[in-house]
Length: 176
Image 1 (tube, rainbow, N blue to C red):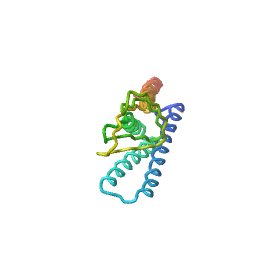
Image 2 (tube, helix red, strand yellow; image 1 turned 120 degrees about the horizontal axis):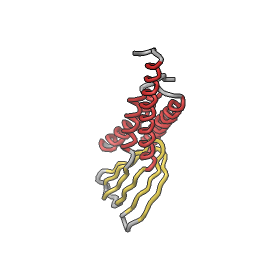
Image 3 (spheres, rainbow, N blue to C red; image 1 turned 180 degrees about the horizontal axis):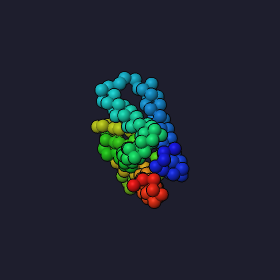
Image 4 (cartoon, rainbow, N blue to C red; image 1 turned 45 degrees about the horizontal axis):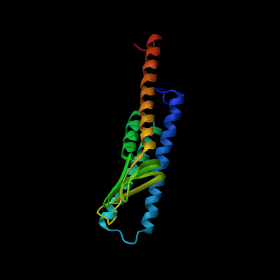
C-alpha cells in the first residue's frame, strides 16, 4: 500500500483501476471481434479502429498507472478518459460514441420527433463519418459524470490525508 494514502482510499483507487482495465480490455476484445466481421478494411475504417484502439489502450494505461502507485497521474488521466465518454451524438451522417466500461446514457433523439432515450451500455464505440444515416440524437453518459466526480473526491481525500499525515509527522518531530 502507498504510504501517502489510507486503506479506504487505496480500495477506491484499486476499484477504479480494475474498472479502467476491464473496460479497456473488453473494448480491445470488441475491436478484435469487429475485425473478424469486417469484409474489407478501407483506410477510413482502419483509421477509426486505430483511434478507438488507442482510446481503449489509454483506459488500460490509466488502470495500470493507478495499480503501479502513480496515483496522482493515474487519477488525472482517468478523469480525462471519462471526459471523452460524456457525450455521444449523431448528426446527419456523423456520429461519436465511446464507452470503456459501462455507460448509463440519457438524452434525446430528434430524428422524427422529440423522443427521450435511456440506454445502458458496456464497452462500446461508434464513429460515423459522412454516412447515409439521418439520425439526430444527443446522449449524456451520467456514469462518466459520476466517475469524474468520484475521481475528484478521491483527489481531494488524498490531498487532505497527505496534509494531515504530514502535520502529524511534523508534530512528532519526525520531519522538520
